[in-house]
Image (cartoon, rainbow, N blue to C red; front, side, top):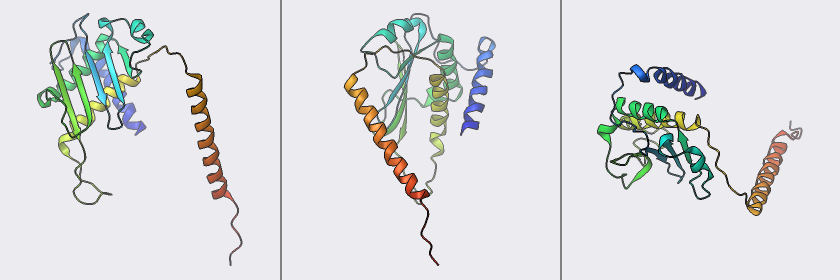
Length: 197
């Protein structure tokens, strides 16, 4: 997995150097000052969002006490490259105007003029659960999600928040309890076994 991530990162870096003279197809052009958001909503409810920098300063987004903690502000050229990669994968031709009602994960591009959504549906298993058949039609979604995460994880965000002391203490207590439980299980596994002949 780490090897695939490194290859993807190298691919994006290589493509990033070619953006100026790129022959990648362009479906959406990031216009300075116009907001473009690319978001991934996962089945567990987590939402990760990228927004272009020229649509509002990163400082104002990160200082907003009510801003979504999953929102990151990326340079316009990174957002443009991501959009061009989505276009190169034919994603805009597969887009819908709304997420599928049975969507497990949704990747969305929202501009001032249009919305594009790609849904990964709940898995339909054929065969056994241990060995499901992969839906070949979802491979572009998985590639697009990988491109999105490559930009997302390489974008630094500094959200300012007041820490809730009680929530922090509760999280520390939960982590200690989890750690103690794991240690007990590990000690049980490492305990010498009785002599059995």
